[in-house]
Length: 298
Image 1: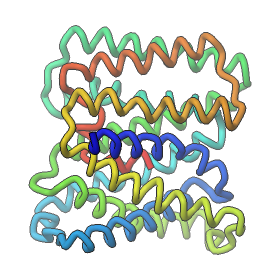
Image 2 (image 1 turned 45 degrees about the vertical axis):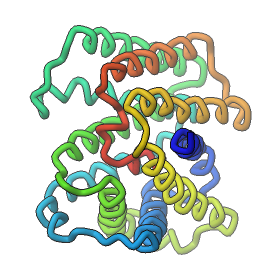
Image 3 (image 1 turned 180 degrees about the vertical axis):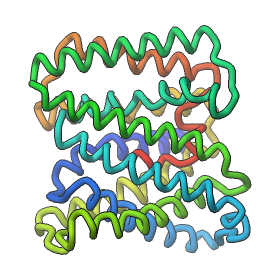
């Protein structure tokens, strides 16, 4: 029961990311830099309080894979946060949940896994659902939504790469992987932010500071802590089902708090997209199980 509560709480925390990011007056890359830095520091503190140590020999052995995964993580965050700026939280969330489809498509190529007929049908249903979301979103709100959904899909593609690359990391726990990826991502984003944005990050508005801390400590740090603590004792089927608390909370916030409209056709498209990914995961190939780290979502 405790594991269920911890995992559900982590999904609720992850579902509020769009709302928190909307309140931060920084570019997507600056926000990603701060969230990864603060999240890494917090989880490192928790890690040492638990009297654990990072196995540096294993880190060195997996260095190239960890580096590639950190690049994917940074790209994922930048485009996801950018997506929130151009479209509704619902559209961004649904576009982001296209990631399992990308994984299914790429798995036969990268992981040499077979693609059964069931997954092919699910891929087709997910694509149809996304087309309904995109088509109706454009007609209802204008072309700005198309760009936001596109950014969400790019973020999903980066997340899919992160999931697949993490499959090649060996003998390191998920919490250790997350700390290393967050730290490496922060180091990679720092020169990028300074080159593209300058030192504007130092001029952040006072109103944004509480939300930056919230994103780094709660959404990233505590969210991951609860996520990994909860999933340790949960079965794969439970993880698959409970993971959909995340998009449900995001869509609920989009409609109730942000007052963002969602048409009936978009609702149907979203149900088709999420339903198809759920069915595809129902045989054990889990969106979260193979992620290795949920940090890409933050």
